[in-house]
Length: 395
Image (tube, rainbow, N blue to C red; front, side, top):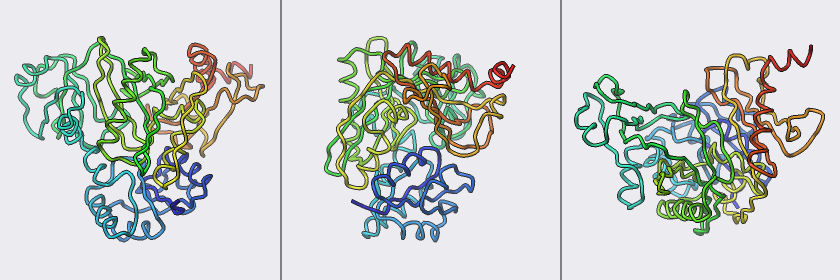
């Protein structure tokens, strides 16, 4: 296997990638363009520099046998440079930098999906500048979704327009516009593909979104869909990853229509928020599986142990006193009883500084005999993060 493991980016996903890689015997180097990135302390070596700084990239590559990513937001020039370095045999890049170049641009990604005859919503690419509302309404109706072509994450760069009437409602940025799909459900399939083309997929998960922040708030495993539909979703995700020739973990997000049609929403070429539940619900996490795939180790067959729920801890100002300043995992019983130490519930804090509302500060995983019990327990633990709860308990 490749013992020197490099990661471009140092966000919360990298905390768990570092742990998985180090447990498998790799030394980890990360490069980040922000000095307060939460995973800098998790790596064996950390480099802080702009991601378009070629000398810094060269220093980073000199420490690596294989490189992966924790985000799509890598400059195009850097991705092109990585492609050349891989051609020269200096390093292996998984997934390929050319894949990242395509997937990071939602216009290119949607075009690729259409070219591959993969099911997805119709769309229109908007350049920066004036847009024709009449054209969009004729094509999609008045209820539409606009997505920035690049740079969107955690609900940012996406807006839902219930009634498109005026050009001023649209952002004046390079973007895509799609029809708003009514009464749909959203699921995600986490699929890992190794260097020999072998795949292992996790059961599909359901995703619920915060209506104000437009970011994932709750993930449940397994998704509440019929087994036949679950099998089709896995087959579709694996088809996507094979067509990409991807190596590593991919998250394939899908819409499920009222008629049980599957439509691909987005591809993420990396470990993903919707896969955090695998840390506790399965025999192997998405993070270990990704490290195995990109370093040349065999994938582990996935076993789903038990129903599980993941709740994102999204920052609100009242939470400031309870946010730890370093990565931390807290274990609790399934009902959130602090006196009981149990693997049934785990709160993962990322160690981020309190910031803007909706920022992901951590997540709660709960496994239980049923999704209903897991959800109730997770919400009870979330409630205990409120300072009001701590004041009442002290009284």
